[in-house]
Image (cartoon, rainbow, N blue to C red; front, side):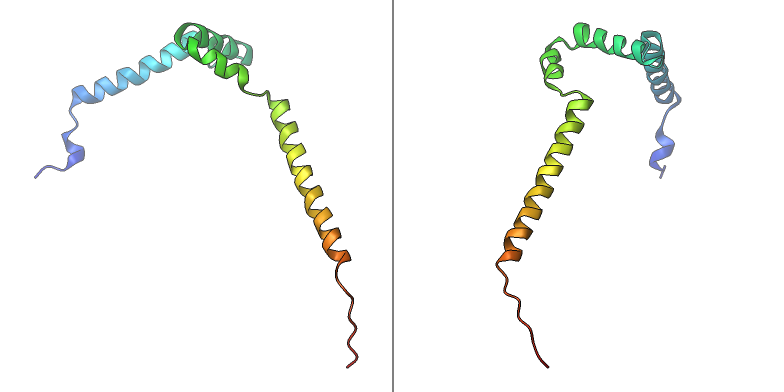
Length: 100
């Protein structure tokens, strides 16, 4: 009985290679692998021509600065809450001394 990996025909392999090479060619031609400005321009073309319904979604995504500021603010608020609770609980304890 033949093993499964031996059933791959040369035609199937050539098809996979052609699809991969085509994808690489299209992305290089579009400028995806060039500078950041070219990549952003290519992404803008994709958004407007291929995926026009996603423009509304992309406008809702926060910028990197907004995201990092939000994360830092949330982290700081969490730490403030924790330490306020520690201070509140600490004041309610009675100090007991044991003489042994």
